[in-house]
Length: 304
Image (cartoon, rainbow, N blue to C red; front, side, top):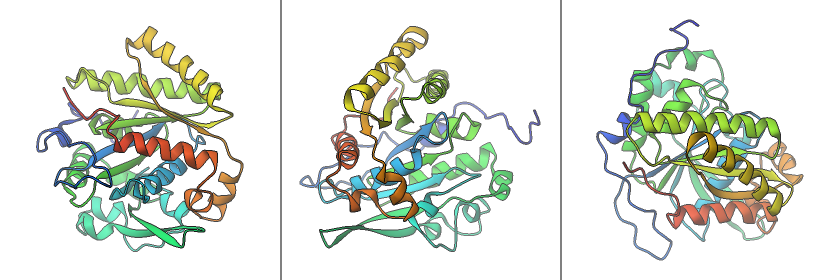
């Protein structure tokens, strides 16, 4: 393989986020006072495409920003070759990550505020989006040093409780670097055998990367998306968990089961918020449950 295309990433991956920042404090609830702290950085990954990772990232962001949790949320589209968070949101923007990587603008100028409407409630929730870019120009700019600099800039952003990093599917070196450096890694998969196999590959490398960086506690949690039911979702997680315990000496935790709803694809086509349009659906309830766990600091912070 061409090393210019697949660069060797210097160790440790987590240096970009660990050298200059302390461990982030737990997220605050709506009733508790907000304290100045570094944001909780959550990387959202998947082994294969088509498991609903980007949809989940956007819906989780909406859930975190909802009236129940009132978190200040930023989504960063870290699919550097095929970014589509902006497409799913119907977002029009002047700048994206490419301009930041080229150092043409400060990172704050590329951030776009988005209002997500809540049907029936006559209200909106606001999140911020740092759009990605589709095309080879971003990939040509992406090198370990530039990605490390980007991660430092993301962590330096103020005014957010949580930052969601929507990664590209698969085990690309950039996704591994970001996943290892995040406070929490959510691996999204489905009940399909191919999705499970690829999710295991992501977990295997994530655990290896964290251990090589000197962390004794992996930061990975599992989301079973598009599940036919809670029991089947739990059973799918159990299969993945058994493999991890047997071969990786690591037992991941279940972040949540998100039940399948055929209306998801319709909402994506309409570029509409699923949570805002169908807030009482089983699927929306499941994503809200994951958000509440995150706010309650069920997920561990990045520790040695």
